[in-house]
Length: 55
Image 1: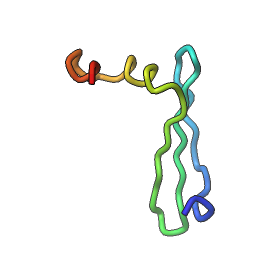
Image 2: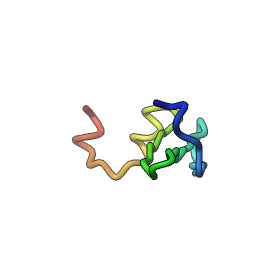
Image 3: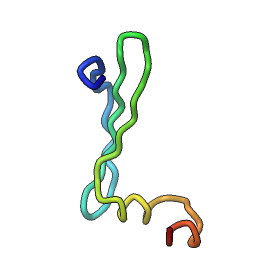
């Protein structure tokens, strides 16, 4: 499905290593949001409670 979507926005996120989020949209307005970066870095900046961060 990816060939039918084009990137409409990139949100760079602070962090070490760097992280970013891309927003893709197709002709019908359907969107895909994709995050790029180390999973542990996203968990660290998330608003998950400490118990959920352990999972």
